[in-house]
Image (cartoon, rainbow, N blue to C red; front, side):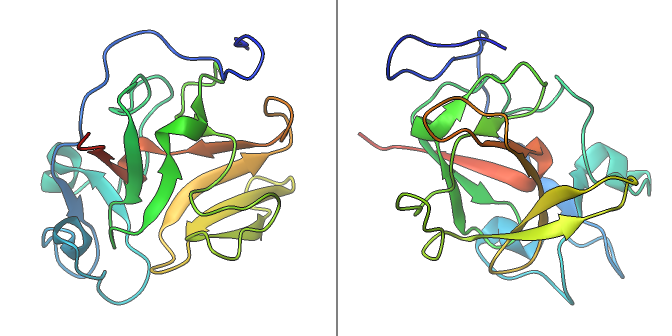
Length: 172
């Protein structure tokens, strides 16, 4: 894993890009209403690239090193693609070497207090081992997982799926 200098998070190389449109996969294949700032229909939003959902494939994540936001180095905020809640700041993004956008903490976190953030942590035993799932607090969309192997001083790595995020650059 790459490490930055004192007080700096490691950065991935490459050009970032903003999200293209995503589609909602549920009882119908309407555009995810969250993309326009609405709320998701009937429970958690499951997102997939438009090309996959147009073919009817139930894709809910990309492959490692393929997400649009992995190498994004612009300054701004990462939002939930379903409900537009702010989730992570670019200031807390780092290159974990895992192929997924990684963050040291959620947007709105103060120290170890995540009560003002828009994420929830849940136990996940889906692959036969204990992990901690991260979901959007507002719409319960699956975002990814958090692991205890991030850079110091916080020591946690939010490993987040690009298709669950949309990026809004700072206007400054």
